[in-house]
Image 1 (cartoon, one colour):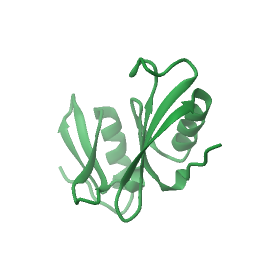
Image 2 (cartoon, one colour):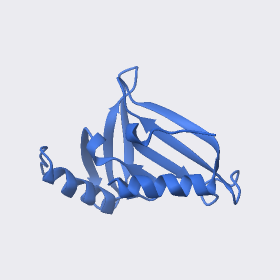
Image 3 (cartoon, rainbow, N blue to C red):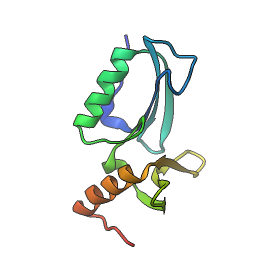
Image 4 (cartoon, one colour):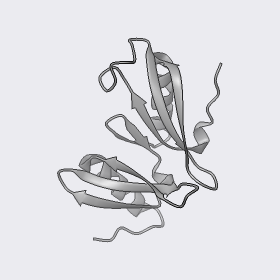
Length: 127
């Protein structure tokens, strides 16, 4: 049995057989970045396909933005910067214990969606 507090998730990377041949038809991997005093990354091994799909659906229903197999909580974004309109951009969701930023790459459509959502909040979009 496993419990994952999805209220603390800043981002989740879903791994399927298409990305990693070591996972099978019924097994998956999930990398999760949790918030706190610093951003912590946790890898959950031996996640069942149905558990991964249920978590992804729950996160999307709660407003997470999908970029391929990456789901990002827009409320957890500190800042985002477009690298190139074709490539996409980098999103910073916090800092590690050592002070280094936790940056995740998103595609251009997810980046545009993120900027639109962030512009509607209290922050500002520059550029």
